[in-house]
Length: 208
Length: 208
Image (cartoon, rainbow over all chains, first blue to last red; front, side, top):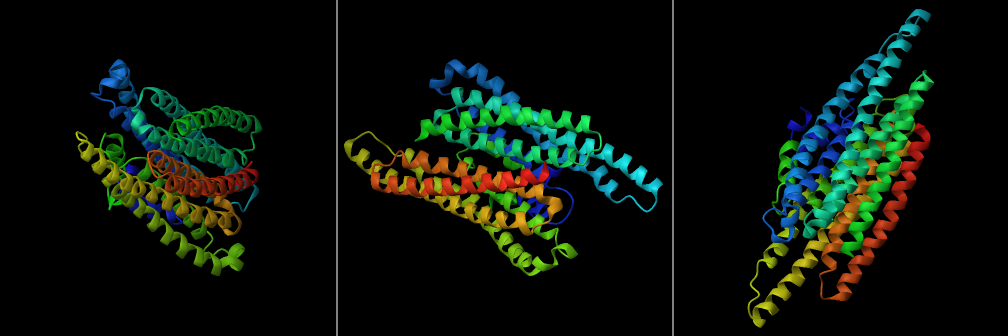
């Protein structure tokens, strides 16, 4: 999988003109970083008297956040796979009216596939945000800044992934499908951005 | 260096209760991802007739953005090094009045060191944002969404790093030093967040 490579190599291939990875893979990894920071803030409470009352919940949160981190990382690969049919569709011939019809049909399907991956990622990012929200309360107070950094990473991932939804839905001929996906993305953006700002402001208030 | 490890391993150590990496290292890598996306958008114009007029500038931008990516990555290590004296200071004994005096002096110096690294990172992130701003104009229009993702990563890095400034300045006894660093961070936050929102909104307008 993509995340098996070293961090410098990822930056190098990201910088190149290769079709993937791009913003989708970058968003997925940023979200995984955000969730990992949450796991850290949970892990830092282990064995501390102050957090004894939350210990059972913390253990459940760690299981959830570790699983979600792993799932977020798979979206680096899912995004690349989802982009492949679109990349191929762009290469189809368009010399005759028949070729144009075929190209348009293939393109339309490829656009749906390419939009589904970032939309699904956005949903997963919102799950991560809700875990971070709870960790701002029950996580280690000493590492509260890391919840704040985590929520920033998740917010960047949410907004980043949304661009990959909108850039593809805009090219769809089927307006109903495009509008349906856009409205789902808009809902996730609205909920996620509000939640992220709320958590970040609360963290900032505790720090300053 | 820290970025020589594989991406999954980084997530694992980030998730652990180890003192570093934490939010500072995560912010530095997110910024490097953002700048790499900028380099990609620049690289995608190479040899394209449409961008011929900008080709010389693009080549200069690529040199700058590649160098800045490498520099941003070094902040993963700089952040860890800057945290080390503070981590040690917390471990100093505080049983006698003399020990308390020594501990406070060492702590005060360590807090300055721990704040300087994220503050310097914030300055570098602003440089990256200004390059992304230009790439929204002269970069590949087909990859405009990647400029948008890049600016989201940079914004997350800027805000994330600011938390690591504020969490340390708050503990300083020397209020003049603390206020000076806070006001620098506030200026960078104000300028960077405005710029990031401007660029992201412009990208969104072109996509939707």
